Every structure is written in C-alpha cells, then in structure tokens.
Length: 612
Image 1 (cartoon, one colour):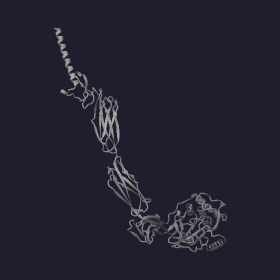
Image 2 (image 1 turned 90 degrees about the horizontal axis):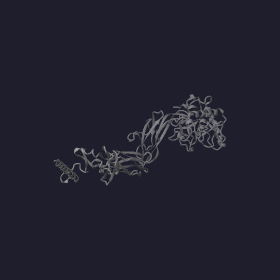
Image 3 (image 1 turned 90 degrees about the vertical axis):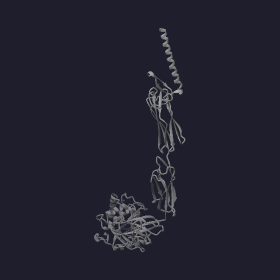
Image 4 (image 1 turned 180 degrees about the vertical axis):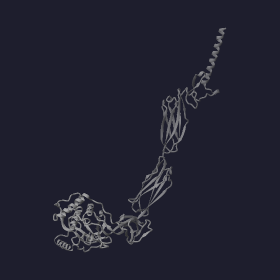
C-alpha cells in the first residue's frame, strides 16, 4: 500500500534531469574541494557503495524530491540554538557557508518498497546517503535540540499543508527544511533566493509564536524497554503496542521462549501475531548479561514528527544524519527490548525475640533494602513471641542488603531494644540476617497523694508519710504544718513494673487544738509504664467537735462532763480502761471529787451546829 507521499494527488514528480545535474555538480565539487558533507549530503540518487540493512532496518533512503540547491550558513561551532531568537536579516559574519540540496528526502519500507515516505533532515552537519537504512526512534535518542518546534513546522507547512502559500513546491520544501535547520543547527540562508529566505523567516516566526508541540506516540512500542530478572526466571512483563494496529508480530532469539503469564505456563509461539497491548514474559538460557530478546513489528500509520535513526548497517558510515517524518505514512515499524539475566541469591531474614515481656509488644515492621529495585517491607503482628523467618528471592549476587526496623513494637507499657540494622552481601549460596528484639516492661511511678479535709483543715501540725517498696525504696513525704485543705502529691519514679509499695502515716498532724482521722496504710503494685496512685486522707476536726464523733481518732480529744462542761481527754484510746489499769490522771480526778464531797459535808454539819 502506497503512502500519501507517493499519491499523484500532490501533482509532484521526480526530477531525473535535476538529479543528473546535481550529480555532475557534486562530482565536480569533489575534484576541487575536500570531501565534506553539505547540508543533507545527498545531492544525487547514487547509492552508497556498501549500503546494507539488518533485522532492525525499517526504511532506506531512495533519493531526493522537492527542494532547491541553496547556500546556507552555519555557526562556527555546533551550538544549541536558542529557539526564541528572531531569524537574522543576514548570516552573522563568523558563520561558515555550505552549499547543497535543501528539501525532501524520499524513503521506502524494506519489507514493502511500495510503502514510501518523505523526510526532512534534522542535523545539518551530519552526512547521509541514498541506500542507508533507518529505524524508528525517540526524540531523546536523536539528541537534536528544539525538536518540538520542528514538529510544529511539519504540522503546518509543506508537504502536510501546501504552505507557505504562493510558492512552488520546490520553494515550499526548501523553506520548510531551512526553517527546521534553524531550530536544530542554527542555519541561516544567504541572499541568493529572497523569496525562500522570506518564507523561511515567516515559518520560524510562526513556530516561535505557536510551538513547541509534544512528541508523537511511537508507532510501535515495547514497555519497558529493558527488564532485569534472575537467571532461570521469567523476565517481564513487556507490553507491546502499535499505533492503530490490530496485531503485532513478536519474536525472540532461538534460545528464548515467550509466555503470556508470569508463571511461564502458557507459551506464545515465536513470530506470532498478538493483539496490541499484549503482556509478554520471556525465559532464556541461564547465561547472564544484557541481550536484545524481544522484537515487535507491525504495519502502522506513522505520524509526522516521528524520528528515524541510522541503523548502523553501512560499514563506511559510523553515523548518519537523523531524519524526521515530514507527513503521515504507512510503514512497517519495529521496536525492541532487552533483558538482563543475572545471578541471584535468596535473602533470609530471621526476626527473634528475647526479654521478660516478650509477647506484650505492639506491631513491628522491617524494611529490607538490597539496592535499586530490590526493596521490601515486612510487617510483624503485635504479640509475636517466637522467631519468625521471611524469605526474599531473586536478589543479584554482590548486592548489599540492609535490614532496618523503623517500627519496633515499643508501647507505653513495654520498651523494645533492637539490634538492627543488620547488613550483608548477597552470595550465590544466599544470605541470612537476624534481627533480635529485647522486650522488657517499662518502669512505672508511685504517686503519693495526701488529701487534707475537715472543718479544721489548716490548723493541724506537720504531716509525714512513709513510702517503702520491695525494690528497696524508702522515702518520706512531708507536708508542713498549717497546710490548707486540698491534695498534696509527691511522685517516686523509675520503679520496676510489679513492685509492691506501701504508704503509711508517720505523723498525722494532730495537736491540742485538732484531732485527725487518718486512713490506714495503703499498698499498691506498680503498673508498667504508668503512674500508680496511693491516696490517703486526713480529716481534721476541732478538739471539741471531735468529742461526740465516731471513728478512730488520733491526737488529743474532749469528753463530756455532768452539767455540759467538757474537759480535755488524754491522748490515746478514745475509751478509758478500767480496774487496776486505770490511768493516774483519772484516779487523781476521782480523789479530788471525793475530797471535795467530804469538805462540803463537813461544812454543812458545821453550819447546823452553829445554828443550834
């Protein structure tokens, strides 16, 4: 099927007479000047003598078409042109002249010579010739600057559009090619053809105002272009796509096999036609190294702006000028991908535990880094108490593996000490690394709280508490006399979890003015990573008010007397003992009362005698 370029609708023709003339001029030039490439270095249709093609060749140069032989001027060095600089009115003084053909180069498909296409060159300093082969490539591979402006020109000028208007096809092609070379090489035309020069300047100004445009999609593509895999495994997936094509022919070298699944169970026969978008895995010999293993080929409609690169199959040419497709064409396009099979080993990571609180930790996480493309994350559930083993396969021999533990499982109740990171080098026999976590209960704190309450709070004397623990702690907590009602606290920290502590009253604060009702001693067990509270309350009441109260009282008190008077009670038990154990103050009080009674009786009798 012929491309739109070979259609007679354009009313264009080949120019055998012009080609012959150009050939004669070129031969004469070779006699008097050193061998030096002109702009496209393709001034006639004579093929290069040793032109060759290979399995990667898609198209070959067949000749030239519309265009003119003109003189252009190139910068003294191969600089990257600034695409924003306006086209100069004349070539700068230090530019060097070059004469040659400026226009369209024709090509044909190697598989179907009737499929032809038209190209512009995009590197004016690099030679090319009829018969040299090309393959499709990416913009980045062409290493040509400002290619987005070039594609804008292709989309809006000859041959895609009959423009600039008012010019002959030869002038249109020459102006389009010279404008392209301004963006890729900085080329500036001389004054020998004012019409072409003015048209070139107009094209450049339009491209500067409206470009650049994005790279067109590759006609046939394999993604990714390269895959690394352990020797003996399946490399992939490769995804093959073709622009507008229903099917793509895929093939591999004789020692390789294609599959449609990662497990390599469903084989794809070599040179098969598969739908665009098919995923492919490849196995091959265990030999290691990088090798081109997958080729995809399809007859597709190739969009203008696609890049074609020298195929490297002509011995006398170490390089050849890259070309850009001037307009949409029907071509056989190819894409290739490589695989690097490498020697690999297996990483074993052991996660071990020690310590008195194993199993009480939270969730943990290991991060394994064995180089780019070989990073893994392993989560470990909370409460794990036995050694866990994890395996990671397909790691290249010689890679360094490091295991870190960003999440250890430490909580408020338990502390975890890890011996990560662990590091080693992968060998063919494999690599084993062990990360051990030591889990212990976190220490806690004892918070002693003394509550002072009661209507006489603030009148008590100093209060003293003792805190003793079975880990050896023996401390006191003193509250000065006159402390007002409220809570008073003191904390004793860094106590091992499970420690038993007893808090007892040493001095209640009772005095001659107040009595104090104090709580019994309190014993608590220290919780891990927490504050354990021991709370004791002292209720402070006035001495008189306490006389009719109940409960165990400490300090002085009062007892009621006949007639409602009250006298101080001795400190000690609330009720007096009886019998021989009666306290001496009470006996003295009884003797005093009896003596007073005797005196009163004597006085009464004396008064009666006097009266008689």
